[in-house]
Amino acid sequence: MAKFLQLIRFPNLVMIALTQFLFYFFWILPFPDHYISIELFSLVVFATVFIAAGGNIINDIFDVQTDRINKPHKQFIGTFISKKKAFPLYIAINLTGIGLGSYVSFMINNWQVSFIFLGIALLLFLYSSYLKGIPILGNIIVSILVASSILILIAFKTECSVRGKHIHFFNSVSLIAIYIYMQVLLF
Image (cartoon, rainbow, N blue to C red):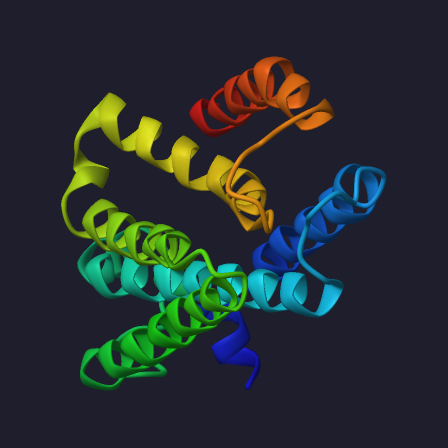
């Protein structure tokens, strides 16, 4: 079990969930107009965490050769779990995340939001398989994916528009947050 938690990078997933819950309690709850319940929000957090865990697994699947050379003591695919078993695990975890996100999307009568989860999972796969090797584009993709863990939360308003005080947040703070994420990832 400990090796599995290392494979999915459990501390990183906890940070994603914690960030989303902090965002919920300090940004969304003070302005509760037309936002989903805490139960549905928790499912969105689980969906995000599952898709991020799948992204960590697929990244390790594609990095077996590199990890064997650069960090053999941290290599999980090929030592603790075979590639043959890791890929179905990746698919199952991703489908769980996409399914949870889609369920919440359908519960709020905004099924189009489910495509966001599918898009993020696909982008993680493309990043791990191909885009990571492209210097600046790979960094931009990772920055977008990191920022999406917060930006996705705005899609779960029960009304399909962003109004009032939230719009001021996204006009100023989101651009700053994306810039900070990019700076952190580049260094």
